[in-house]
Every structure is written in structure tokens, then in C-alpha cells.
Length: 478
Image (cartoon, rainbow, N blue to C red; front, top):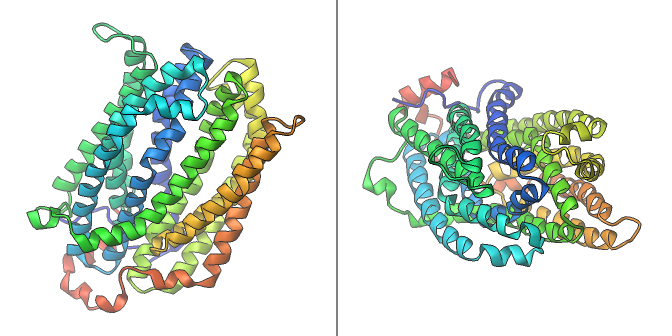
């Protein structure tokens, strides 16, 4: 039986597709962020500012470790969506099998050195001594369970390429509830469970992510016919692997540049003391929520662009980008106003410490100006990724982050009258540069030549050879 929730994005209202497809992804991103936000709530409220800083300081490191592999998940969306748009279903199955094998092996290769060198990495980014031990405990447990994060992201990316953003959301909701229930049990210890502190928060997250993976595999196996079932479909395909890395490595390198830049920025922030570290940790959680609508819409743009390029419908691609820009820009403007109007009220979810609240509010009032240009950049980069043209998005990040934000943060923060405010100003300026560079490249139209699937490879008559698939897709998501 073909998956009932896969959707054909090559027909129908583009605005409706973007909204219907991005809303479940937004809710999914919201739930995903709740994993770490729940950790921050329990840790910050009951274990204190130093414990909150310990949890927060490890995230740039985690992001750095997973960035290259996360790029392969981006490649999975691109390949699956283009093959699905062209109706090359055997290639869809081979892509799924190849992606899962690559990511499974990669997770093991990253987790082992990550666990072994966690403390050394924390020292390299100037982690304050008073949070070092707690940060190392949290980081080591989290890294040991990266395989579940990798596989969940891969499976979710595959579902998005097929036009299904609701199934990952449903399973993620279940496991988020489990994480919420496990956090206090494992942090504070109840009954036979020992009190594990910040390490318990990491254990709860890993267990919840493992459940998400199990449920997604079960769904692909029982509800669709797209999970590879033959040894040949699971066997690593060299040509497909090369294509996956060609698309995924620039996307992963982009995330790596972001994460390494985050490490540099974090190392600068760490020199201003534990209060500033805790304020940045709490405020950056709110940043995650602020960016989520744009991130979700950018992912939706990638899937819509991928399917329409696979189908050879370039005019619809242009309309997808226009709709994506309008949607993300409008939402980001509203969020910016809310954040600037009530920063302390929002930060109060994570901490009651007045010094942390004051420092965090200053950060939010400055950085909120970046929400609109950053959201627009997500939409444009989503289109380029959907076309399989991931190198320009990486170069855009290098320019915005390493040519603008990092040097500007170092320079401005060294001015006594600005101090750490200089870091916040740099964070507000760099996304505008990134958006302008991305949009200028998009207007050149060079991304049109990067499609993996050429329409001539699979003519329109293919629909007649797959009546069940055609009937299902014509009905859209159900």
C-alpha cells in the first residue's frame, strides 16, 4: 500500500501547500525544541544558573559534531523529492536505504571521539570552571546517543521529500511527552532511579529520541511500500553515495561553519562570566522558537522546489519562492515585535535570577532585529537546496558568519563601552548580509542547472504506468 500522506506538490495551490506542509514541521520543530527547553526549565529552575549554563554551553559542540551528517539528511530530502516528483520509485527506495546506512555508520564514527574528547573540547571554548564537570556529563551522554538523533533526522527528511510532514509530528509528540515525564525522574531521582542531575536530562532526551526512531521505522515498514525490502536496495550504492555527498557535504559544511562560528561566539561570551553565559543560554532558547516558522517554511520550500524541478515545472518554482518569502517575512516581523516588547516576561520561563533576566533582555532587544532578514534567507536557501544547489548556501554562510559576525563580534566586544553588547550587535547585522548575498545569487538563475533528475529521463507518460501512485497523489495528503 502506498503511503496515504504523501503529497504531489506539482499541482494545486502553492500557498496552501506551503501552509499545510510547514505547519506540521513547525509543530515538530517546536516539540523538538521542547526536548532541550524542558531540560533547561528543570535544570535552570531547580539546579540553578550554573547548571543552566552547563546545559547551554554544550549545544554549539553538539551542533558541530552533527553538522556534516545533518547535511546528508538535507541531501535525502532533495533526492527523494526530485525522484518522487519524477516518479522514479525504485530510486526513492535506494535513496532511503543508502541514506540510513551512511548515517548509521557516520553516527558511530562521530560519537566515539566525541565522548572521549568532550572535556578537552569544553576547555578549548573557555568553559567556566564552575560549570565544567556538569557540562561534560551532559555532553557525553548526549553524544553517546547521537545515532538516534541522526536516524530521526534522516527518516523525517525522507518523509518530507515524500510530501508527508505529519507522520514525524505525530510520533514526535508521543516521545516529547515521554521526555517531559522522564526529565524530573532522571534529574532528581525517584524510587530506584538515582539522582543524575544534568546527566539525567541528557538521558531522558536520548531515550525519547530512540522511541521516535523506532516508531518511524515501524511506520515506513507497515504503512508504506517505500522502506527497502531487498538486500540490493540496502546495499551501499557508490554512485548514489557520491551524489548524496555532493549535495550533502556543502549543506553539512554550512551547518559546520555555523556551529564552529557558534563555538567562537560562545568562547567570546564565556569570557564575560557565568551570568552572561546563563543569559545567553536562556535567550538563545527563545531564538530557537523565533526561527522555527522560517526554518519550517524553508524546509517546505525545499520539498516543493524539489518535486517541481523533478517534474520540470520551473515556473512553479519561482512562485514557491515568492510565496515563501512573503510567509516567512510576515511571521518574523510579528515575532520580532513581541520579543522586543516583552523580553523579560519570555525569559522568565527559564530563570528568576534578576541579573540573568536583565542581561538576556538586552540580548533579545538587539538580536530581534535580525529575525526578518534571517527568515528571508531561510526561504531563499530552501529553494537552492531543493534544486540540489547547496554550495552557494554554504558560501553565503561563510560570508555572513566568518566575514561579518565573528570579526565584528571580536572587534565590538573589545570596546569597553560596549562589552558583550558588541557580540549582540554583530549577531543582528550578519543575517542581513547573508540574505542579500543569497537573494542576489538566486536571481542569477544558475541553480536551475543543478537538478539531479532531468525531466527528459522520465516522461509524463510515466503516470500511466503507476496508476495507484497517480491516484494517491492526485488525492493529496489525507
